[in-house]
Length: 458
Image (cartoon, rainbow, N blue to C red):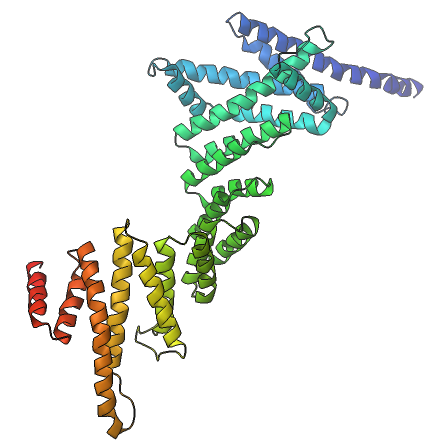
């Protein structure tokens, strides 16, 4: 029994030493492999030996939480990735002559398991041995400034992991571009984001450009989940732009989730309260949900920021027009005029006129504004002409007054619809409306002329 106890106690330091020896074996085998690479004859036997040794060290309590252990694992995984990349490049030599094109294609096609593993091991160093990561970060800064002292103790190993970190950061961007070129947009988005996180880890600074590129690639994927994922990263990192919220809004609409879309816009407006595009998107959603008052509030703010934009006036005019002339949603039939009809009608008229005045360079906008205002006058004229009010004895007198007033609105509608027709000469609805108005106002010659024009267009 004593011998067994003594033997067990004596074995513990031997096991610890054995695990440290595994790390040493991995270090030597990796060095041997790197020598064969320099000689132009890579020998994977050495790399496989290094992998076996470091994998054993990574599962043992004495060595698994050491920064150096993870550093060797990162370098070994990256060496495998480099071997696979070189193999892919050689495959393409026969078919792709342009060197840059060949590189991009190789980055787009190469398996990424070992690249991801190398990146994960860098992150592991930061978790298990933050002081060692600080050494790597300091070496990286010194290396970039050309101030590395090769005689410092441990410089060679530290420099190799630092160089790998620098290289992996660059290659993450290359992979992203390669995936983008190959139209693998989901993967491109992920690797642009990886580049951003690597830069943050190694420099401590937020890489806005890489995260933005991830969002652009995600938008190309047409994948709502991917779009939301990468734009949310910029929001969470507090480097968002209005573009991020617009993208998330569109992604939620792709998912047919208007409630979530509205929440995105609310958050975006809170972060970027003065952005006119977010305001316009919110306005559109308000209109789609029938929230006219909220939409008008946004449009008034938009006009204050851009008083020459005809679209704002056109949409505002259309809202007031609909408020003045409500229709049953189910049947489309006219509902009774509201109490504030006169105010709404006047506001619609003013905004349509402003849209016409500010749309000289936009024929489509000017056509829509002129046609809508002309149609509003025409429709109100028809309403007055058919209006019946008062007692039986009063109706004849009232009808005569209403018909005279209706004719005033018909005459106001004609020049606007004529203007619309000059902007869209083959527009049949405008021609039909004008033919009717000419006849109602007693201009038979023009009515006949418009009738002939309609027939000629059939």
